[in-house]
Length: 122
Image (cartoon, rainbow, N blue to C red; front, side, top):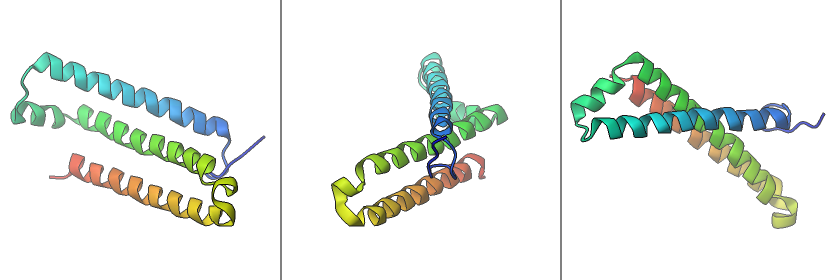
């Protein structure tokens, strides 16, 4: 079986499944939000606050937030593997790829933590 370093030596099938499952969660969240906005017409702060005070909506939003982070991580890892290679960058490709992946990881982790803080903070 072929393995990679995307997710601690799991197979490419795992990465493919992560992309598909997270895409479904993100699509469901987007569809829900569009329908909710269309059904409620002009939304004021009270309506928006009322929606996000419900536990099920916070959990759904948390699922979407984590899905966005996982989806982005697999996608950016794939892009870095495809375009930051020795053919494109020469012998320093490994350094560039590591720095790019580290930066992406820190940014995505920061966004998820920040989103959780906004979602569940007071």
